[in-house]
Amino acid sequence: NAGVMQNPRHLVRRRGQEARLRCSPVKGHSHVYWYRQLPEEGLKFMVYLQKENIIDESGMPKERFSAEFPKEGPSILRIQQVVRGDSAAYFCASSSNSGTRVYEQYFGPGTRLTVT
Amino acid sequence: QKEVEQNSGPLSVPEGAIASLNCTYSDRVSQSFFWYRQYSGKSPELIMSIYSNGDKEDGRFTAQLNKASQYVSLLIRDSQPSDSATYLCAVMPAGGTSYGKLTFGQGTILTVHP
Image (cartoon, rainbow over all chains, first blue to last red):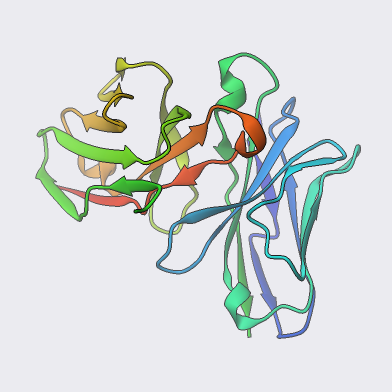
């Protein structure tokens, strides 16, 4: 019974490159969330997606960041032209489709992005 | 005022004692409340959810919710060194455009010493 899977676990990019972070939710979950944890800061919501739909992207920076959750395949968080300030841990979470458990979000192991 | 505030740490308790973690929130329409545990370098792990006023117990953990006071707490009984971690309080609104969005507190670092 696999939990949320994220890859890569560690990603190093030079300034100006693109970063692609992948997330496969718990089997049967169709709600996916992305959060960012900057060094010495708390967890911050970025975006909430369901299959082929962005439900809430109020936490996404206006530029360079995008997210998708296609009908088939993992959810992708894409950061274009990375800068040093993007260095952080990026966590994906997923939740169920029904009952009260639709509110409970389970986190993946995270992708630690380092921009050099 | 921060949306979700947790009691400042770090909190240190002896093994076997009760650890008490507190959290207040500012948005009155918040409906769902969660406690996560995060070990250093790891991802948050859901340990408790609570939706109604009162207490909810699960093993050594008890969550308490008081919506009138906008207050939620977590008690850990018989604390063990393995409970040493950062505990995150998270709040979700009832609905609307922010449904699904968890707002986290800054976390309380708990150390249980033998």
